[in-house]
Length: 370
Image 1 (tube, helix red, strand yellow):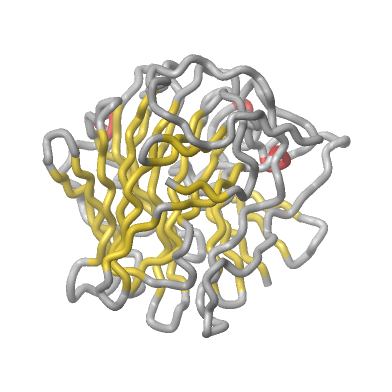
Image 2: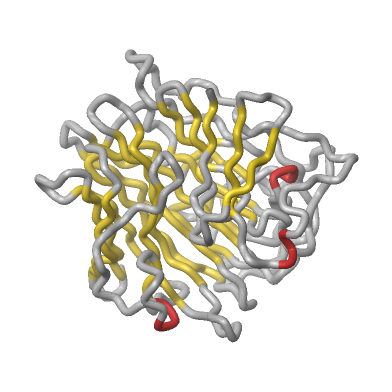
């Protein structure tokens, strides 16, 4: 049985492999209204999450000339696994449609980009304008070389190099899965910074730490010392945090010692050195696994380009060994799953840049080293 669970709303596909099942988290933070979509394979079940937007009237309803695809293909990672029950990081979904529209000027264009510089052109439909029909378009960087390792903590650094210029939600996050000692998944969660418009459309800067269990239930957690977003105390996951563009922020997730599945997320301003605890999350499990970072964008595909750079993928393994990971596999939300086809991930000086509304030069599944 392949089980696919929604982490909030979006069409973004993030694969987490557990014993006997493949969990695909639709990360995000909106609502818990579930919609079931039947695929050709009766073994596949999508639990999709909705958002109050008119663009979702035809939620995940491809036109007649679009082919249905299942984003559940997985293969073993580059690391050999001795135990069949170990979680296997997946290879991303089938190649996406790509675009060749010229990129917008980047305010950090003086940074050296070392990835491919030729557009990736593939047959198939393209989506380069309008709202993504799934509500958001996402693209991911699966850490390379983690194999079936489990961790005590993981961390990564994010820098917004070109901040959004429209009043739509942008979310840049580090995501992890929770595992118990028997390699069984107990859920997953994400922490990161957001460009978050309020009800009037005014941009608001926030930080998030939230997640779901394997049944799609929102994980409970502690109260945050940070003020609520837009003075809305009902949202426990998202809190006010006045991050700045062109400044690096370190995201870190780790277990509270001697706790029963209590996981803390914190954010460190690398400019000032100030570390802020976001909150604790009761995710269960004993270990972290399947680390991935991503960009999730609720804006139109043709809205002005925004970009971030991810750096310094680090973890502490279950045996206490500190490890640095210097590569990641690029994954894009497929056109058939509502993604924009003009997003791109590319190696840049000291990290990997993710940008919207740009030329795609890195093909689906490409390993980027930095």
